Length: 105
Image (cartoon, rainbow, N blue to C red; front, side, top):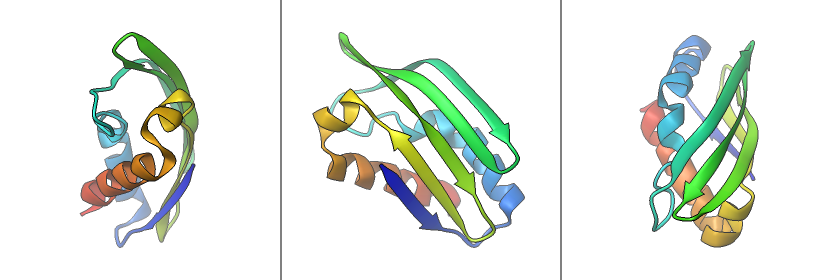
């Protein structure tokens, strides 16, 4: 899944916001609460590489991807694995996009 969202902040502000808000990005994007475990993230310039396991009840699914921040937009490229199949691509995309827009306001 790839989501690109325009922003009007400085690149440094957006990087700080993404870093601070990352844990909330993938929680509660569906009808069931999602627990994030085994989180790993590393910034390389303005690109965040991440991976973690999303736990939903007894199910777990590896999630990995990147968040790239430019002067004008934020691009999230993520493989949601089983989570995407459970929630549906449209619902996942809308929930993540809504959260990112909320973080950037």
